Image 1 (cartoon, one colour):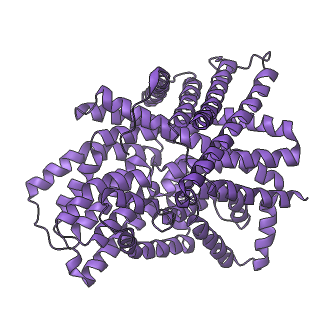
Image 2 (cartoon, chains in turn blue, brown):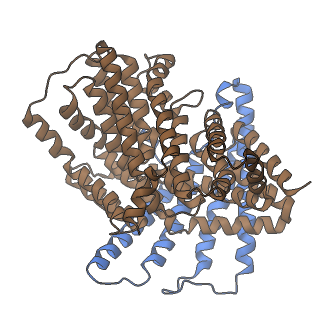
Image 3 (cartoon, helix red, strand yellow):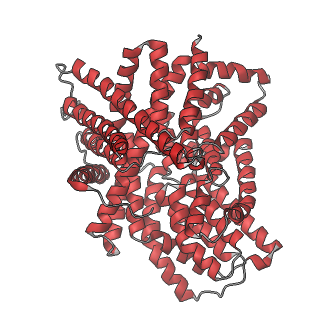
Length: 157
Length: 434
């Protein structure tokens, strides 16, 4: 657990703040509902609230990991290559990542479009799903863009 | 081309992408998407991927992962690893090989918070390695005990690997946590036995250390009392049914936050660092899970698991032989792929095979994580070995590996025990979680 580099730029800081706030919301909702249950009280819709916070924190986490280039990869071959080939493979993996994020965006986009008039919402608190889908969509679009930007900036060097 | 053939080719393509350094999640997802597009058509494949993406990002059970990670980072900020090692060193340090035993004990203690092998080896190693070397311990014993002890991070709940397995295999995370308790305890005992045997054979490996006074021991134990209470509350709460695993993660994180504040370690910088690290690590795991679930749907649609069941039934229903083959495949792949990739590649392929033989998925989860841990301490991947070398760059990698070898042998015996006695993993969930 080495100290991480500081979150770069206002976007990075905003992401961390949003993701962190969502994490704390999850923590508080979970803890309060446990305490309430053991006191004989029931908090209606606690899981639905937590789910909404989880979408926010997970989406922020996905972008944070992409931004910090923290996605797990197998280094068996990479570590044994010359710098030239290593750079080429790294570029290839950035292309693969951006394609994957783009395909996920298309898939989720198709579902979001399909369900735009269905007014899907949670059972107890009636939290609408459409905005949550848009948050997830924003995360995949941003991640794909980050990967493409990385390839372009390397090509420009 | 038949669907099982497409499945087999997809698996090979995945191996090529993984070894080419493509992020594990993207490699799994692209292979799965490509395979599904081949088998079902492009549109169904894209829609299925979109559904998996949103279901994963909104999954309540998966909320445990970032929260347990945050709990670990907060405890790290509160200096948990140093305190655990100091307490264990004060208690066992004077015994033959005591500091090595203390390192393993500290790994178990910190592992009960961190859930990660690398984090456990790195944080405990930073404290324990210099101390052991300063007291004249052989490099092999010092490095070996920390590298092997580090794998306990993944064995003891809340293990990140077990959470990921629970999501992929659709098994109860709480049940997996409880099932891992006895195997983890026996693993610790096996490691203790290795240290005691090594020191008995070659006493020069671990010169005696002076005995700590009772007041020093009391002080060190008091220092970890709060942390131990938190660990007991989280693990005990799940085992006794006080709360579910996601609720335990919330309570544990809340406790860690209070503990950090109590120890005057909570400030803007430490909190920011904990949140940043938590988001980055959980984002990495989210992508891996999304990719793995897409790949898993592809494998299931291709019917390659069914073909594998048919192939393995050629062993004449000999369970021991099948398990031997499965273990050999896992250990072989474990020397090529990292733990997470190994789990995500093999779970959709092997779980149906073992389930068809009557094995419990809970047992398979524990078995798989155990096999993964072995990959952490043997070359060429052996991430824990590299972690130790980063902490002590003057110890050659070969010497670190020689130090790990006796522990690796104990790991293999322990894995055999887990195969021979599946109830080691299944008895506690059966007793506690009816």
